[in-house]
Structures are given as C-alpha cells and as structure tokens.
Image (tube, rainbow, N blue to C red; front, side):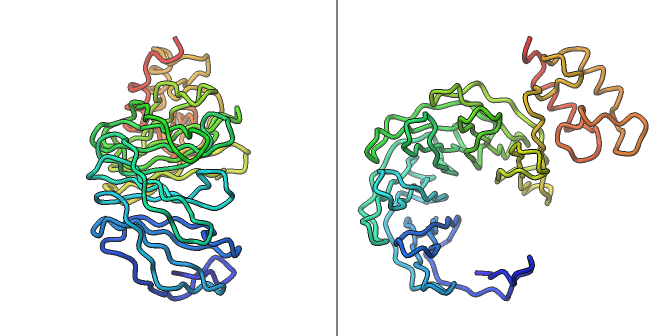
Length: 313
C-alpha cells in the first residue's frame, strides 16, 4: 500500500499478507463504513482475500473466501441490488466466474459459479443491458473471446454469450466509448498485440470487434478521458515491449478511416502509405493515420488499417 503524499508522490510501501500468489486487487467499501477496502484474487490458494480498512488507511488481517480454481481477477460491484458491494472472480482453470454476495457486513456468502469461456483471465462489471442491474464481462484467454453474463435481476446470472475478441484476451474494461450512454467493451489481446472494442447494440448484445494496434503483449487495459475532450480513451500496458500505449478516442470515425469518408478502403491505405514513416513535426505526418497516437505513422498503424480493411463499406 502506497499512500499519496498529497502531491502525486507516494510514501514508502506498507505490505499486508494476502493469499498464495496474489494476482489482482479491487477496491470498494465492502463493510459500509465509507472507507475503501481491498479484495485480492489469489491464483495459488484458490481464494479471494478481503482486507478491511481500519479507518485510517491501514488494513486488518486478510479473511479468505473460497473461489474457483486459479482465480486470476476480481471485480467489485453491487450484484444483487441490496446496496452492498459483492465480488465477482474469474477462475482460469475452472473456466468459470465465482460470485460471492455480501452478507451486509463485509463478510461473504459461499461462492456460486457460472460458466464462462476457456481460461477466464479478467472480469469486469457494469449495467450492459440498461436494466439497472450489474452484469459481468469476462475475457477468456484460450477461447479468444469475451463472455457476457447478464444479471437476472436478483444477483444470479444468465448463461454466458460469447463474442470474438483477439488472440489471448487478457483484460476487459467496461465503459461508454462512443457516447451513446450504453457501456461498451475494450479487450486487451496479448498475442495479437491489439485492443478490441465491442460497441453495445443498445440491448446488452455487442457488435463485432474492431481492433486497434497497441504494442507487444498487451496484458491490461484501462479507460479514462486522457485529453479532456469528454470522450473516453484507452491506456494499455504492454508486457512484451515494456511500455504503455495511449489510444485517444476519435469519436465516430472508424479505425482506419484516414480520409473520414465513413469506410476503410484503398484511398485510406494510400493516405497512410503517403504518411508512412512520418512523425509529429515532419511535413508528411497525418494524425488521422496515427491510430495509436504514438506520434509516428508506422507498422502498427498499417497493420491496424489492414485488420479493419473493408469496414463501413
């Protein structure tokens, strides 16, 4: 735990024991005292640890709750509408999601398991179908897809519906990416070096994935308005290239649509090739061809255009 000094710098870390092989941590007020607590997914001990805040930024001894096999990810949300935050845990080796409902005091009921895809690596929660109940989205690393589990309106979940993502999806985030007030999905794909965006159809189903180039080995994706234009952008952690990719939201323009005419075609390919190799400040640089906003029109941008060639036609 690194506490903020009040200026964006941080104090020395304080360490708290969790389970065996902590892999993911989520933050939320789990016991209703208005202090944020911690939930930790432990891949080695098949459980999730809950560390309650003492009310001063220190934490009590971890309490462990059983999950599935090899829990890799945990999300915090009110899943059954009782105003208490519950836990959803993605379990790699049992190919399911564990839901642990809050007892109303920061302790949790026994896990209930719901099938997902093959090798769930990340879970996120959000109201995907507009019924005011939190649903689940799960990135599945081996089946190369994302599973959507809609809430039945009581904290139980319907059978998963699967949507193709990329190669080895490792992380999923839920946010309204196109400004239509429906939450969409962003998925980081480790092996294909890109991020898939799946736009909500307005009913909790999703359109085909559109892929955006990142760098080598994307393992995590996060969402926020990074440039203050009131549109949500993406930040992607790349394990293989030791960097972070920032993908700025271009609004309704299709990825690969260099000339802005609504489709990705030969004219866009020609436009990108005309700017290929140019960086910001160079005479030939075209920001509309720099899809990953890294300041240069390069191979990653070309591959992104080719991946979406024909879209909008």
